[in-house]
Length: 219
Length: 217
Image (cartoon, rainbow over all chains, first blue to last red; front, side, top):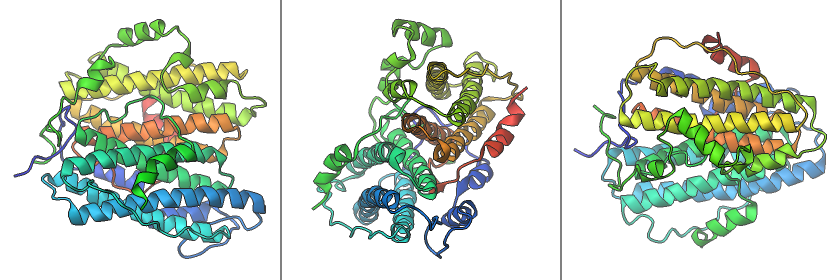
């Protein structure tokens, strides 16, 4: 039997009883889009995207599109990373696999939400880049270490770019995504035995700083 | 049976960082540390974003209200972990003590930095609320921590789009993601997955208060 993973600081008890609250607070994609519809009163609805105010000034839309395309590139990277990991990593621990499965699903959902949002803003979503993750899938440990770097970077990227967003629905979407990136980061940090929340304040990174970190993975 | 083991995937000295940074300490230890750091909130690591927030110009009243709203929540969280460390919720094992110590340390820093930022901006920081918690044991303490931290994430996520001042947006986001890290940490200590949801639902101020209300005396 494989080792279940918890934070090394001892799990208390598992009875699944937090699930109800987690389900209540956590949002599925459908919830998210429905909620966006509620918040975006008077906005244009589409089946797949966020609700955006039609009377937005062109300039603010344009700058938000640039930020969203930056986010989309990162989400493509993460999504591709976990999809490949699920095919290639020989998991020796079922909780590490669970992490990869959940996170793969989340990152895919982020890509699927950001693409139509860019289109609604009148922008053109960037193409999915080709990625090269080198030896990241050689074993479970290497995968987890790489995942930790990617998730921490994702958090700092959204935190750095978020303040420049102008469209309310996009701000909401960014906040609801960065929170999930932070959940991932904390989770994977615990799995490798690092402190899940190393600082009282997460350090933001500029787009340039983030792209420099992501670049080695872009073929 | 899942969740009862302590083994990280990698067998490395996982506690080292916590111990090295002195997180496993009492409130007094934290305050001493703060004193060593010079008593200014901005000496706290990672709080650079707040140094800018404190110098912001023309901050609207609505931003100060959001900061005070956040301060109330941070006071509540700080108080909760302080009670835990003082033994109010019974004996905590080493891992749970480490968890409570880390979160107490972070939430205390959030309180310190939010208060001084509000003052710097010409506002009046709210007083610490009177709190009350039900009788909890270790297991319930961790589960309630999940609730509090998820509430914090939802509150910052919900407030973020309404913030007008750029430096305050940055500061709020820097705390928001830490609350999310705490929430995942609490889930993991409880033996559940760190992330289930693809998108995190924000909370309005009213929804946040509704969740916090049971703990306010």
